[in-house]
Each structure stands twice: as structure tokens, then as C-alpha cells.
Image (cartoon, rainbow, N blue to C red; front, side):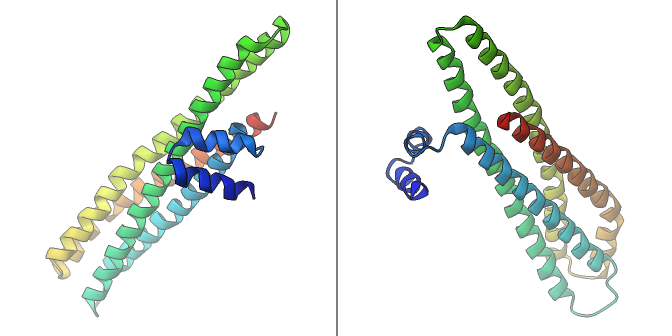
Length: 210
């Protein structure tokens, strides 16, 4: 039921602040929303890793091409590029969603420090706030680094798709093969960076649960 209320709030307002207010009313706090969004971003990063690996494998099939329907191979290359672009966009959207709710949570936490009557409890809460912010900044930086590495990979995949589109012949396959090693390294570097971001996310989720 609570998720139905949240969905209705979004449809009616189109505003994240209204979403958070509705969420609070049904016991779904910003900390929980943030945790859920971090986990969703982790999942999208894993899916992106699989998709970029799939695109690389399809290009390897092209590079090893020894005859047959080259048009069909091109269609598969184009499909892998489009799927990779979609996966990358989803990663970026989920990172942006994390940053939005985190900003709202930290602002609220900071404002509520003034409501404490106990100086010691206020100091402890402020200390925890700063620690959580540092851990969050570390995680977000890792996510953004991985996000940045997607752009050159997508650009290479797009170049390959365009080149094949206008030069659908054996020479084009050879030309793409000459750059295959560089693309492979970039995708491997991207996957490594995403794994770091996922590990940082796990640490941050643990921090939120403390």
C-alpha cells in the first residue's frame, strides 16, 4: 500500500520533495530510500558490465568473421551498441537519483542538529553525519569515475557501428579489428572501475545500517 501512495504522489506532483514527504508519512524514510537507490545502482552497474562484455564479444565475432551474411552481423553490432547506450543511461539516471536523495537526507540531518537539547547527543550525531558524508562522497566519486569511463567506450562502439554502416565489407572488418585491442582494454578498465564502485557501495550501505 505504501508504494501505491508513493507512486500516486509522484504522478500528482512530479516533484521529489513531495515524494519524500509522502514516503515519510508511510514510514519510508530517506535513509531507506537512499539504501534502495544505491542497491538499484549496483544492479544497473552489474547489468551494464554484462552488456558491455556482450558488445565486446559480438565485435570479436565480427573481427573473426570468415564469410556469410555481413549485413546480419552489422545488425547485431548495432543492436549491441543501442543496448549498451541504454544500459549506460540507466546507470547515470540511478546515480543522479542517489545524489538527489542523499542531498535531501544530509540537509535534513544538518537542520535537525539544532533541535537537540543534549549537547553530547548533538555532538555525537554531528560526528556521525560527517562520517557518513565522507563515506558517501567516496562512494559517489567512485560511481562517477566508472560513469565517466562509459563515455569513451560508447564512442568507440558508435564509431564501429557507423563505420560498418557505410563500409559493409571485408576492409571495414579489418579496420575495426585493428582497434579491437584498445576497445577491449577500455571495457576491461570500465568493468574494474565498476567493481570498485560496487564495493564502495557495499561499504556505504553498511555505514547507513550502523
